Image (cartoon, rainbow, N blue to C red; front, side, top):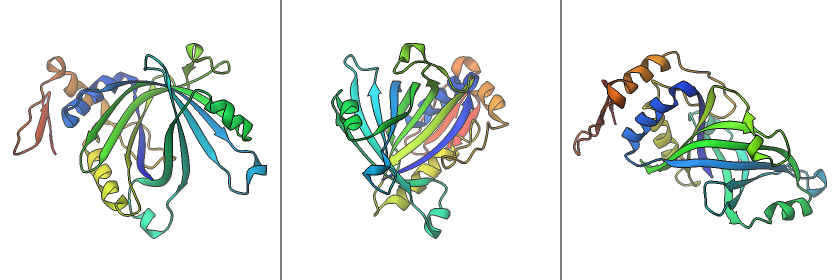
Length: 234
């Protein structure tokens, strides 16, 4: 299972977001270029709809494939009281023949996307991953070189963290706490809940980008970050 929140940011503010993430996370970013193929099952396979995503990492010298199955979101009073979406998720490495296998099993192509951007992976109360990417659609089947933006000028930000039935409350809390540090630039919420861009994003971006990108100061005792005149206590 995993905890997840999403938000959007204007492309012109992405560099400022990267500076902020670099200061908070203290790790280098990874380049992101992923071809995502979404497959849905044939109704004859059962009464419960099933969706799997085949992810091809195009940043690798030899593209690698991962299959990810996303299940339903947690429901009930407990789910309503937390600000992140908790859902079942299973993923595994697969060979490049995975698409052929799922087609043989009755899965059909629903849509495909190309995500291009960067990601940060770090430990902060949970193993958190932040991805920032432009989402592009294919004009022709599997034609990643001809992909065009779905929403020009807007990029998707996603924060995820693996969890279990025993610790999802703690993981959800860690994700929520982390998201507060990004509030000057964007608002993150459960997938499907549209919040739009943050009114303060432009001013926050200007401050972060001033002084040539700013400086990041860490104290082993206070864990306080100061970047281009803006300060976040972590």
